Image (cartoon, rainbow, N blue to C red; front, side, top):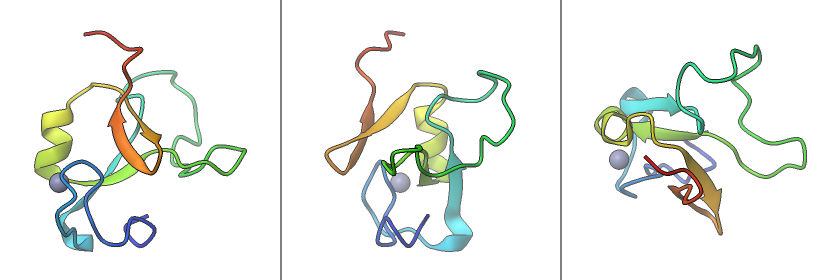
Length: 80
Ligand SMILES: [Zn+2]
């Protein structure tokens, strides 16, 4: 996942190394309760989830993000 993002964080776009990377789930934690939530692509091949710095993941908190035009952006449909 870090490789496909060309070794940059999906949120701040600064260099990201494996040791710093945390795995982010688009929908935040504790949603759905499904198994297999470690997938990195939707069934149609579009990207899901992302590698982030721990600090960026913490700032994101439980907000929902999704890939749009190659960038990982807040999902505007989800209001706080
Ligand atoms: Zn970052």
